[in-house]
Image 1 (cartoon, rainbow, N blue to C red):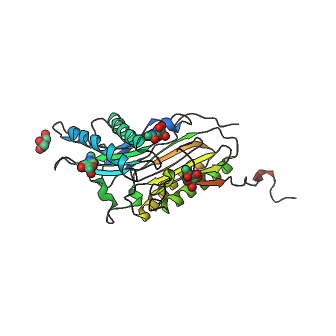
Image 2 (tube, rainbow, N blue to C red):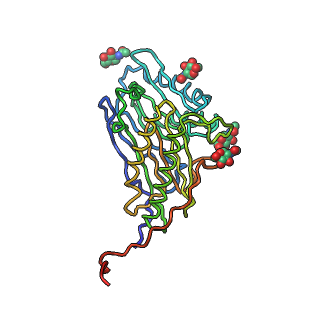
Image 3 (tube, protein in one colour):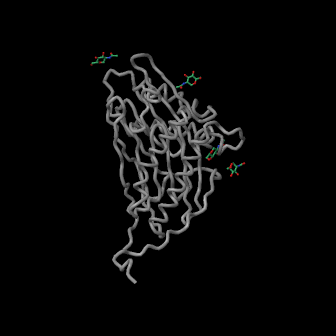
Length: 300
Ligand SMILES: *[C@@H]1O[C@H](CO)[C@@H](O)[C@H](O)[C@H]1NC(C)=O
Ligand SMILES: *[C@@H]1O[C@H](CO)[C@@H](O)[C@H](O)[C@H]1NC(C)=O
Ligand SMILES: *[C@@H]1O[C@H](CO)[C@@H](O)[C@H](O)[C@H]1NC(C)=O
Ligand SMILES: *[C@@H]1O[C@H](CO)[C@@H](O)[C@H](O)[C@H]1NC(C)=O
């Protein structure tokens, strides 16, 4: 009996943001083994009023934020635009190692995708392959304050898809667990941009890694540069915890994207970043064959 690929997303999560409004995680596309075509988002679920200045203020944000993120050293920018009480807050982060033109294009696309995906809403988080965008009329950056930050209240979305992997689920799971742990540890321990011309390692809180498994497994972890190191650590470990159920049970997902407005954790059996990985891991040893209990374990 084989469990074959279905092409169906395994789960999407919903959660609440502090402030009490529901956030719905939805899947735009989850093509089988095609992370390059995947994007997911969360809508605030907070509709515009008919006389709202939101559309014009969002237009200003969308005009400025892509360029500002692309020219910053970390590919990161925050902004507040408009006039009270019609302020709109924004934050964008490009994947580590992306160049300025790709960064700008990704954030600009994320604005379009978010508005198409959350029509009439006053806020959204959009997780593209090359960048993360969050905008809202909510003062969401306040969440980083010591009095508000609660790892358990981070909203997230997990999108996963299956691969037809021939090795045992336990072995594949061990390789996935190894790469996710390695990229999380490395991202958290790189709190300042490396003094290097090497563009793959110039970003703060960013790590890529590969496991020499068959299939080869690619992992990526990144936090918003405005997080404290302990917040980055808490955010990524939360996402790793949320992704872990997908690594068990024989589902053998071919890729997982766990996204929040504050950090991102991904792996795939296809490359998910440009250039060389920062970490190279050997394949874990195969699990020792287990004796099924019904075959008389313990008898001679
Ligand atoms: C928009 O309309 C609502 C009710 O229709 C009103 O309470 C609010 O003050 C209006 N806002 C502006 C900026 O005119
Ligand atoms: C972009 O950066 C410029 C220069 O720092 C600033 O004046 C502008 O408000 C920013 N715009 C946005 C939307 O972030
Ligand atoms: C930026 O990166 C993209 C994707 O890797 C590449 O196609 C493009 O040529 C690069 N542009 C510059 C100016 O380096
Ligand atoms: C950048 O750093 C990575 C990881 O240390 C390394 O594998 C790669 O060769 C470096 N690239 C350049 C151009 O130095």
